[in-house]
Every structure is written in structure tokens, then in C-alpha cells.
Length: 108
Length: 117
Image 1 (cartoon, chains in turn yellow, purple):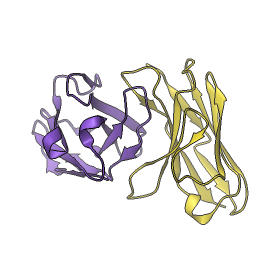
Image 2: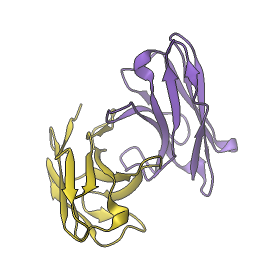
Image 3: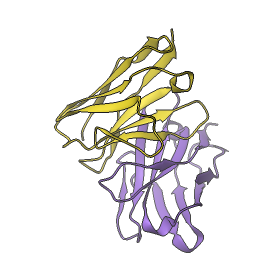
């Protein structure tokens, strides 16, 4: 099973600032990494797939990068609607499909 | 969208059937998954079913107790949960993917299952 580890657990950022979230896989996952955004009481929403491709309707301030085992999600200028929980997922080796424990982006 | 239902409070050892209805797309062309999130825990994939229903997988934690199925004519996905345990307490989400090696591109809002006496 591929273990996905995210850091930090919580990121405190002021609106307008840049946020960078990290995700590490326990083995290479061939860039088959997705990032999801989850707000309380709402369905998770796909943000990035293939490590760096924005999903439909996702603003350009969201970007993904990385390869092999190290991946990151960057939000270039945080807007109020971006404060949420973000979690990564690998879909290269399955079953099981595995997720990171999440990073909460909160208002500083 | 995807809409789950069927979550409830159930006693340990009990059973429950979750449903997920898709709208706005043709559910029969997508692989489907159940994913759960226990309080304070990370997302845990539970089960997968291919678009035709021919391919099925389960997490080790639920194998032998849960059964996934689908009715494409009704645009519906199901999860039959038997021999429920306290550790099955979670919000259960259904999520679709174009293929098994693709991301989960649409999720429902979830349904809460609580296993407690």
C-alpha cells in the first residue's frame, strides 16, 4: 500500500498571501496524484490531477507540481473561499487508492 | 451531482444499506467508489466497482462484511454493510472516476453512519 503523507497539518495564512502544501508518497506514483478541496459540510472537490493539471473551473491561482514521490499544491494569492481542508490522493497503485491526512488552510 | 442516503445510527453487529444517485451525467459510463472519513481521520477508500459491475474491490477493513453494487438503469450505486463495528462510524461518500487509474472527479456530500449501542 502506498502511504501518502502531508505537511503541515495546519497552515495559517493571511488573505492575499501564498500558500504551499506538501504531499509525499512512500514510493513513486508516476505523477498520478490528485489534490482535493473540502469545506465543512460540502462534497470534496477535485482541484488538481496528474500532479499539475487544474480541474475544470479551478482558478489559475491554484497550481500543482512535483514528480516521483514529492508533490506540492500552491495557492498563489489566497482568497476567502480558499480557506479549507486540502488532501492529496494517489491513483497509480490500486487497490487501495490512498489519501493523505490533509492540510487545513486557515486564516491567520 | 451525486447524492448519498441511508446513513443512520445502528447498533454494533447491525446492517445498513447506503444509496448514491447520480444526475447530470451518465452514471453507467463511470467507475464508482465509496470512500469514508471517520471523525478526525483521513479519507479511507472503502470499495470500487467498474462501470459494468464486472470489477469489484474492497478495502481489507471491510472485506467480507460490505457489498458494493450498482443499477445503471437507475443511475444508482449501493453499499450493503453488514456486521457493523464501532470503527465503521464515518461519513460515507460516493465518488466517480472515468477509469480506475483516474482521479475521483465528482463526490457526493456524504451520509453519516454511526455504529453505537
